[in-house]
Amino acid sequence: RKEVEQDPGPFNVPEGATVAFNCTYSNSASQSFFWYRQDCRKEPKLLMSVYSSGNEDGRFTAQLNRASQYISLLIRDSKLSDSATYLCVVNSGGSNYKLTFGKGTLLTVNP
Amino acid sequence: NAGVTQTPKFQVLKTGQSMTLQCAQDMNHNSMYWYRQDPGMGLRLIYYSASEGTTDKGEVPNGYNVSRLNKREFSLRLESAAPSQTSVYFCASNDRDRGRGDTQYFGPGTRLTVL
Image (cartoon, rainbow over all chains, first blue to last red; front, side, top):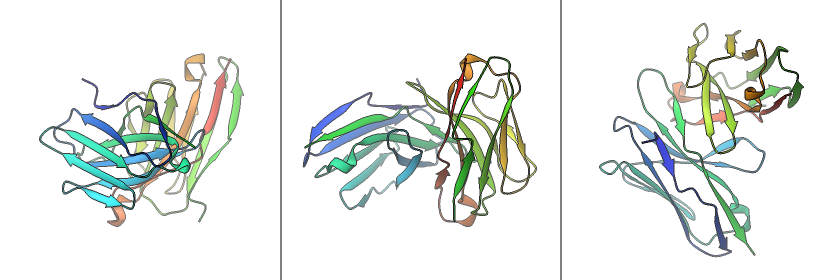
């Protein structure tokens, strides 16, 4: 099982749609979890951290299920500007801080 | 603040040539990283430096060397480039030490082609 696996995508949705991304991780000792966004030919940027209690930032909601080793990202009321690749990222912990990235899921929001 | 800067932005090498990718951050971060990103493979860690004076191998270190020149700068060297090293290279730094969480900041990337 790969360390971090994401929906392969791509996702094509109309403006205003709700879209959900799913991610699983294999290391049960993983300590922190994130969603990054990467625009075409640009660097990844942090979208939001994911907390055990779930967290929301505007139209974006992230959930973590430690028992199932599962992370999700929900985008409501999709905008054209949400078109990007979404990366699920896990810090597997230890004394050295290293992130493991999923391969990403491409989202295209259409007018 | 410029954040994380990388040079060059683009580079074409012939097989066997050497080059150094430069990275600098002005955020006073202790930790710095080099990744490569290939289609269908996602981001993979090449080397990292948890603090000035230390470096460690990541997932794909073969064919690369690194130098943490000082707290600001972390360079990646290809001694003898191979076509398999054609990729986009990202440098990143991390502000976890400041107790602000685990945000990792990335440079704009270097697009390297080895012919």
